[in-house]
Length: 339
Image 1 (cartoon, rainbow, N blue to C red):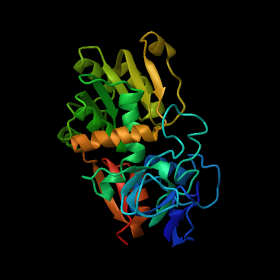
Image 2 (cartoon, rainbow, N blue to C red):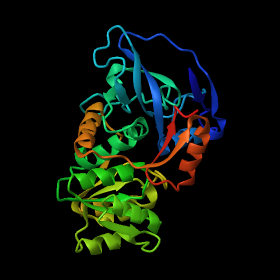
Image 3 (cartoon, rainbow, N blue to C red):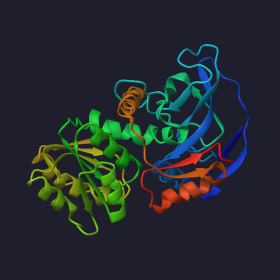
Image 4 (cartoon, helix red, strand yellow):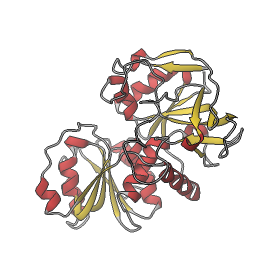
């Protein structure tokens, strides 16, 4: 099969396309012809060495894929040849709470990734693709979509009529915007780009804030909520934004900690947490059960993910460069069928 490999920690410029062995299936495994593979900020971190992989050996990168089943192992029951599928993030976390054991493996980090024309998965690591989505759209769902779902509705506890603030216009934030809007929440979003904010309004953002124009953007959130703050903040910035996210949340509100674009170290003001009776929850993507709940919601509301740009299989390095540049709105995808 044709696949890319890179050297973790040596940048995405080490991507090399090559032929890899076509291995036999174990009884519960499924072989999938990959149609498209989606990128996440995590994939750039793996390439740059700021996300642990447990090995410095060359690896097939990326963790989000959509495609078609082309072969099944002798004991597979959940899928058949011809089914369209997407893979979940943690193949070992099917349901229940996260544990060190069920979150130990993920594709493109500790397990071979999906930037290839074929990939092998355990049948428990797959879910059915919503019928209204093509593979490019479906390849955006797993990491960012599950993370947004967990942040909003599982750990975040967002209710219809509640309010949610998303930071920036990357993959998780845009997925969270679409999901929160569809669920009947009042939606806030920040960006430094007025053009991106206009696009966010087209997706249903009711309150948009330019954080260049309003560097103390938490004050703007408070002004637009009559001083109360929002019920939930989907926090992707980390060290540079956490204090403002806390200030922008209501008393008793929740902060879903998703990422650390500006850094993972933070001197947290504990008084703002304790005195505000606020809850901070770390979001480590989610289970297959959450994924399947998300997919049903996407199908029910006929949601279509926002795809920023699509690259051909031969231009995978350009897809990484797009993420590194930070100018994307929504998801960046490699169409594996475009050679």
